[in-house]
Length: 111
View 1 (cartoon, one colour):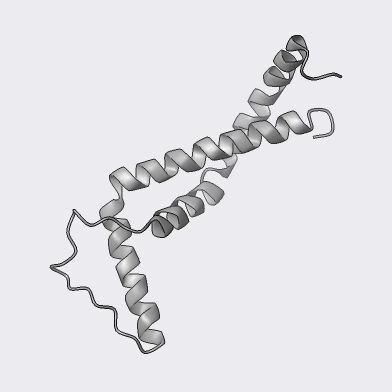
View 2: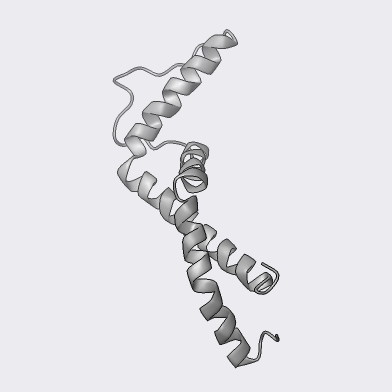
């Protein structure tokens, strides 16, 4: 980290933004119905614990309803932080030297 410093951190953050965005897009397209079902189940349980009633009927949940942004983000963030971490770290380690070399050639980074 001391040799590449800010370049390594920038590459990692850039890959993180792309990774999280793609994960959210895939969940939104492929798993929105499952995410909505999970969201309703969690709301029913939590509201049941505090004595409230969650008003959804099983026939009301259809493919046209979308889960909330928060639900999609939490699922995508969980996948992003756990499953895709080794991929992100490996790509960062592989890409950083080439990007640092290119930035040095352009005069943006000094040794």
